[in-house]
Amino acid sequence: MAEYANSVVSDAANPEMVTYTHIIYALHATSVVLGLATSATVVGSFLFSIPSIVAVIMNYARISSVRGTILESHFKWQIRTFWFAALWVLITWAISLPLMLIAVGFLTLVVGIGVVCLWIIYRVARGWFALRERVPMPA
Image (cartoon, rainbow, N blue to C red; front, side, top):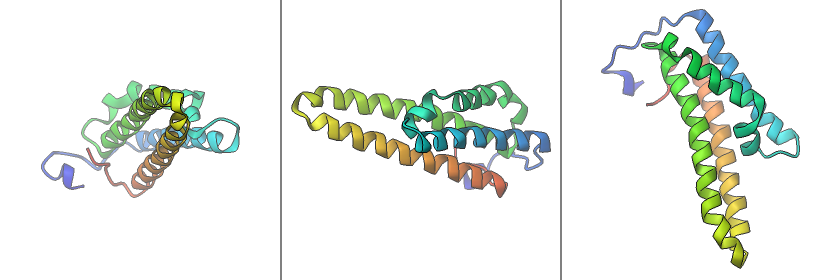
């Protein structure tokens, strides 16, 4: 909340938009569970499954509706989680692919994807718990 101490942020978020934000977290969480429960990876499911892609589209479609409320920080948190996960995966592949010539790349790929997986789970859980407590996410 310290990030918002100097800005005008209203906690009076529209209850309909709070529910909408919960739905977005639920869609992201569904992608994570699909990754854990199927042969897909959490990262692959989070970036390429229908629930997660729909969630990001929902973020972009309604972000103007939450300007000036704590929900704006949650929308930005969700959007950044998606795009940074994609960035970290690209970086992991870019590092691992050339290293696969000496077999080390297979290890760096598994470790890198594992770290991104844990980071995604953390971000979805932390954001959803903060929303439940009506706490804004850090900028």
